[in-house]
Image 1 (cartoon, rainbow, N blue to C red):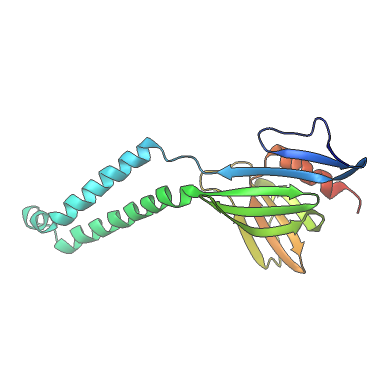
Image 2: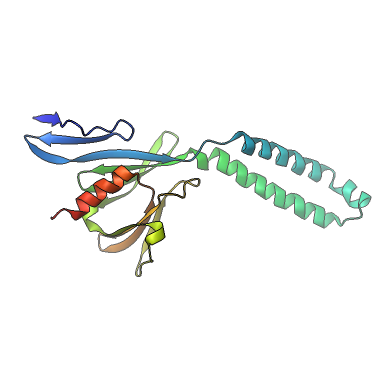
Length: 194
């Protein structure tokens, strides 16, 4: 008999506890972090920069003669502004569509990368394999790390946690931004006896 226990539903983060014939089967919890939406200021800045680059590129020979500036310097400036513009466009169109989902199912923590409507599981770890779980500002660094994963959005720098995991004999370091509810659930599972 599968029943939902009372008081275990978090509407905002989709957290649930299930009971199976009176025993706790496990915790099911899901949350996502996203980049902020593109602001009007960034869009206007992109339009101004695009206009400036196009104008400078089209009139570079005239500016060179009129202001007695070497043509190479004007073209170099135009190329740098064009590179900045391409980076802004990449961030606006691609990076802002990426978000991460953290799922906690029983004692397994799953990290998914989402691009638009496409989801891909990047990593799945057993919470009992976590060796250290600290806020980033308290992390002193670790030795013998074989792989590092970052499950963060560009705009989010607060509440970042670092986690060292011994996963299948390899030491990994993870950076992610869990909510206070997820932090509490992870610490509860880590403090349980096996």
